[in-house]
Amino acid sequence: GRAFLAGPPLLKAATGEIATEEELGGAEMHASISGLAEYLAENDGQAVQMCRELLHRLQWNKDCARPDRRAYREPLYDPDELAGVIPCDYRTPYDMRELVARVVDGSDFMDFKPRFGAATVCLQADIFGLPCGIIGNNGPIDPAGANKATQFLQLCDQANIPVLFLQNTTGYIVGTKSEQAGMIKHGSKMIQAVRNLEVPRITLMTGASFGAGNYGMCGRAYEPDFLYTLPNARTGVMGGEQAAKTMSMVARGKASAAGQEPDEQALAKQEAFLADLFDKQSGAFYTSGHMMDDGMIDPRDSRKTLGFLLETVWETRHRVVRPNSFGIARM
Image (cartoon, rainbow, N blue to C red; front, side, top):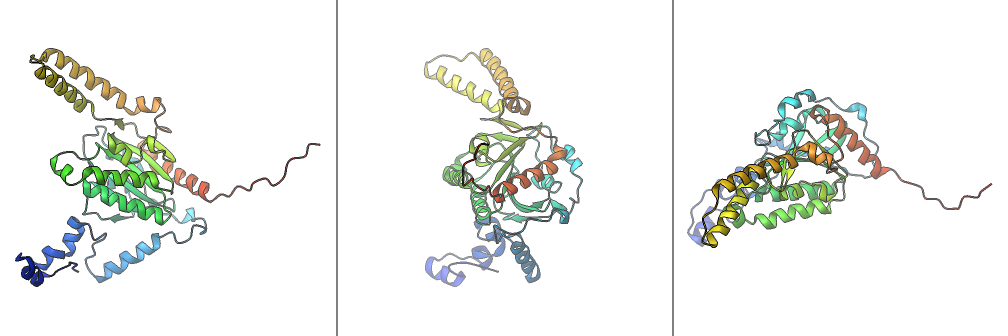
């Protein structure tokens, strides 16, 4: 399939540019570069199957019958493997789908725009028969990933599907290219979408959670219904090493502006002190001890815990409390 505003002949006649149909509006281009396509099918049969699965995952009626928890399938991959899948050091990369495959029913999920903004993972799945949207990180959030997440969050909200945030990001990507691509405005759209969600939100800290990335992935300040932490997680304004180097650069700049030579020995000591301080105060045991989450869990209990939390928020949204219509008469 192809989609474009002007085909190659019109493009050449109007502007003189020469391009193929695939370059202008091919399926691969729209799935990976423009973001126009959410899903890419190999053939008509696969496209029909994708449509069937999408319709199956829609929550048509908010008053629908309670999902049958007995009908769920266990993950194809053992949840106990999570202790080895999730690295202790947040700087060690891993694919968030490896975690999800050991948490969701049947290890089955539908990947939303997998080729666009690839570092931001958006999935649809069930946990113990309860549907949820899942957003995870395979690195920093770039402009494409922020736009993708915004659309996915709004779709989940429209479909009345709870959202599960799996945090493992060092924040929104920085640099000249990302700033010129509108990182600030696209990141703010994502944060706005998170704050405006009316469906339940559950956050699990699975690795790094630094800077504005903490906000965009529904950190404590954005009041998720529940927020839990894994023992390896780290939460902070930035990493300890980055904080220490930043402060040293600021000190060198001040010394240079005053026409003085910086004290490199003192700066080295300051860097070591700040790196140690940030690393200590960003650790999961420190943050959890200061009540910055609702508890710490063993990675191997992720499926059971998230399933329990989903059932809790599902019941909360569907349980109707009958108000008293009269006073109580004392005997």
